[in-house]
Image 1 (tube, helix red, strand yellow):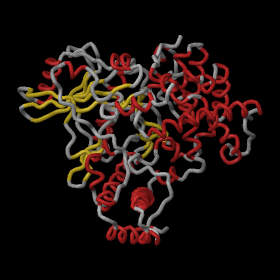
Image 2 (tube, rainbow, N blue to C red):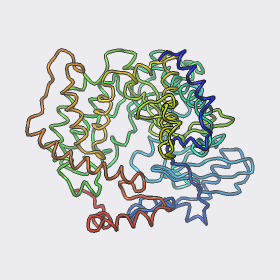
Image 3 (cartoon, rainbow, N blue to C red):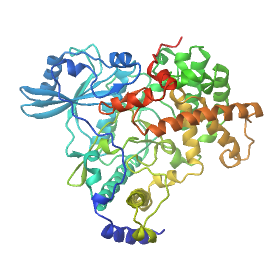
Length: 547
């Protein structure tokens, strides 16, 4: 469809779409919940959900006591205030606990880590530097960090980040009530954010740090093109490129291993580092370094494979590492990319994006691996840009709603892609890269062996072999799966798919580690009890450290 034709069609649809009360465009419902603390103890313990199994261990992991008076004083000093009137817990996620402190001069947000992990120090240091880079050099609407300390030994007794409170309303709280035209306007702004992030290309891959933050190793930032219009050589020199802070390089005892954590001078070096990392972990002979343990993994160890399976598969992965990286320089450059642009992480004011939050784990990585559809508009169903003729005659309201949802999602996705194409953004090329999905999924599953197991990675490498002539060029594929390997894979895949179907069927009611919301706890418990003996396997599960 041409740009002009799409513009006319979009304008026409905006004029005649059903009212918001009849457009249920489904989106991520993970909104921030409010927690009114009853004394300091509620500030320390996890209160935003329950676990159906292994709850005592999970709650113990997330119990973080700290010096409340000291933390309040740090916030007062950072904001230039005189007193702190109140502190309330407003959110708990997978990694952090968030407080709002009301001062005599206004309010600030204080974020502390939920679990004391090995790489908290460098992870927070990189996040603060990344937020400052995005705010000052890219000109993105990012809350200003007023003070931070990643040393758990500071007087507050916990790492902390003090920042301005995001302006506006959280998009997840108002998205369902917005007119379609307003949603389109916001998606257009998201496209502008994506274009801004990818306009600056780096020669190295890794995580950003302040030059004043001790990290080893690190290197000067070299911008390939698109020098930030809000920056200068002087301001850019405040930052350096340091090692990756991704948990895969640090968690589960991996912080004690000698691994290549970057920074890397090319995407091939990065991809190879992933394969060499997993080989090194497998060769230690310690299962805890290789994978996290869940209930189903304990029931079907064969799906994840033994050490020999892991080593064999990652050797295959390394043999094709270079073919997984595009030859075009503009697609292989590294960029900063906020990978989690969901509605809860976007704030709006007067229908304009006023703040983008949650920059944890944002890194400088290869463009072809980073630039994907933002979660806000990600949709893989059929694209329907107009109401079908039969819509008018439909009497089934559920079917009418399903069609309205499809049209809404299709229009938002098409708007994003249209904006990328109109701007001549390199993101448009990445979104349509030949075999791009297969390549991204191969590297993703190679990176996340601990949680995903070997099945998905083996499936991806099988697709690489099948499409090798288009992915690898003239040379023959360096590996071939044997008949025995294929037979084993398909047998294991049935179990893996059954597990995936099981969790998909729960539709977020219960997470794989047993977490459920406070509101859903009784219903979730009743569901697993209703499974009989199979349910008891879950409910009686206790995680014991692997040898």
